[in-house]
Length: 194
Image (cartoon, rainbow, N blue to C red; front, side, top):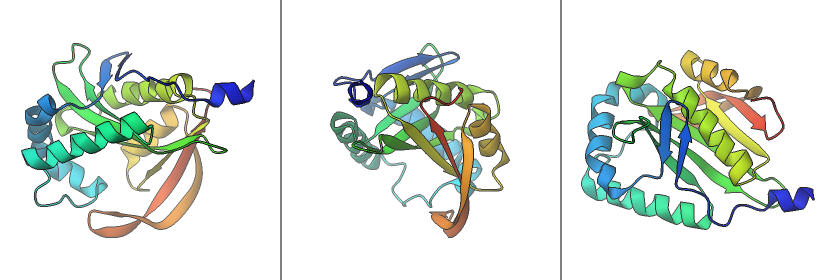
């Protein structure tokens, strides 16, 4: 019976209502809002992200990004979502379940970003709760992992608030803001309290 629950949904939804937010698969029509929000939030996001390629905010780069997102979604390798207001009109940020592993591990990695005007207002808390519902109850993963910089207090609070447990410390784990930086490692299991 446990094996049957580990089989992914054959057609996962491309949108999820999650309290104060709507999670929706990114689309080409989102380009203008996405590029504007990312540009307006560039200095806010830079300390927490890899260095952006020079063409990152171009329409062509966005088109390539959307094709990759669609390929990942279809294959089950990753599930990207943009975070919108409940009416689907205003883009707030984004989050992705990536590196989805099946077989004996049934896990994925969670990454997320929030536009500066919307940070600290509880939107990402609602979005992460929604994506955990998706991960555990729709595509039947066993484990979701996340990593954050030790000095990113907002991210630490978010992960712990939604039920992640700190499991470790990885030295020089990811190249963020142009430097290999240490990260805190977190995870939540399907049967952990949420």
